[in-house]
Amino acid sequence: MPIRFRLALWYSVLFALVLTVFSVAIYLFMVRHLEDMLQTSLDSRVAHLSSSIQTLNEHDGIGSDLQVPSLDAFETSEIYVQVSEIDGDVVFSSSNLEGRALPINEAGLSPDTDEISLDGVALRQLSTQVLVGGEPTALLQVAGSYRQRDLVLGRLRWVLSLGGLAAVGLLGVISSGLAGRVLSPIAEITETARAIALSHGFSRRLETPRSNDELGGLARTFNEMLASLEESYTAQRRFTADASHE
Image (tube, rainbow, N blue to C red):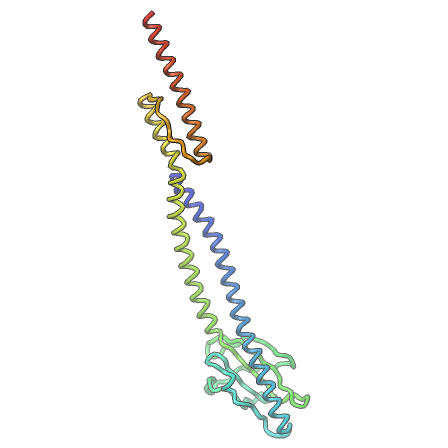
């Protein structure tokens, strides 16, 4: 395999490894970021709903029926809200639940987060007890779907995969061309050496590149060697001619 292709292959492999690490880091960051966004949304809704339920029931008195604000103001197509009595009976739920019920897990006084499933859809649920007059009065549950997160992550995987393959392929083509251009003086030296070996034309010289790099030094050294060979070859022919004349 020519050197230019080997160099291009090495560059492509190294770039692919670096790009893979970078892509995995971006993907994991996005997973964490989207989950934090969902958790922040759940925390906000639980805080607002808990405060509203407490205010309504403290105003009407603990002995009256449980009062709950309109839950549809707090839900979206991917956010579900449910309020249950302490004994577990569901008394209010958001309209997007459509008669379904969120699974009830006993929650402490502080919010409790767990992973649940609703009709095969993964949800993150935040549950907390609502206190009225210092007594637990209701169990509030707010759940958010992972559907949007999975959609974004699926698109991100496609972008990173296809973009990474395209970038590695493009780098391979570019690095092969650059390696061929950088190594062109070596090809010229090879052709010159082959021509000199066949014709004994020691008067030929390589074009010395302007750059003061390793290939330029090699070309100058090769020209110096050719000058030395030409001088030795000329001296040998002159000696042979003089000896024949004598």
